[in-house]
Length: 392
Image (cartoon, rainbow, N blue to C red; front, side):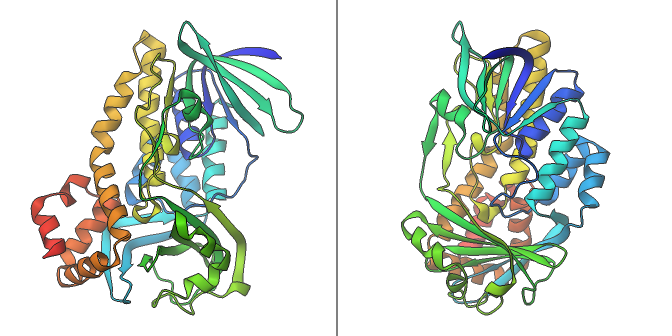
């Protein structure tokens, strides 16, 4: 088993990991990034970048944003929410958002990190954490092809390895809360009546979300309660249960097989290792329900917060605890809004009521969609006046 030393080991090369590694390398850190997959690779995801994500991409570098814009993404200008009865309402963004396949998006960020000086090791899986005097001091990793192990010692380990994060589990801080859901996602061509709006259709049980991702392809997600996961085996038949979805998707037009992910509602109570030396970012820290589309934005914004904390720690020896505080300031409102919506989606009668109120109050529909799209702070949708307007 060989050994090497770095300023930072980033475990996971998805948006959270690649963006963190990119920012650390640009700050002068010596960074290695590991991922068990080889790129490009598909990922079950809504594949929607909220409007505010565009600003984060621009801060990652104009070359990153330009490459995303040149990758033939769709542009969404709002969201349509449909109740179980088929009644719907549209909320509009103040600008547009990009939507493109994760196979393209993740590869763009992975390549940008490598171009910035990050050493990228694909088909390498982190297995254990290395400790020194009670603090995380690296990882033991294994190449998936030949089984060769390597000890990568580092001043900081960044766990960005997703919903089933090895780093989070080794830190022993993974929790689950209801509602627990499973998502089944596919790419389908020539879907009827697809517009510049994403669509969310609530049913009994579960919901369907879909929208264009460029080049005539639509990404579609069927999200079901964990107890109803067996329904996912009848993917296209299940889509037809939803009144405003029925007949719009044809199984013969599928262009990427159905992928599954979940259960959701996994989170880490504390995103920093108790003894120091490691932090969690993206889905490894907390997983947002795909109904709100917060996942990619929270991964990118969380990467900015993580990189700031790591750079300061590398330069001054400061504790990483400031990262946990920064996450609370940034995401508490979003967590509250996402949890409220996630619970409401499991209560069809409530969704009927809310959609009816929003149809009569389009300014509230715009506000809610803009808050979930990060155009507005989440607290704008959490006032007593707004909540009352949604219910009465």
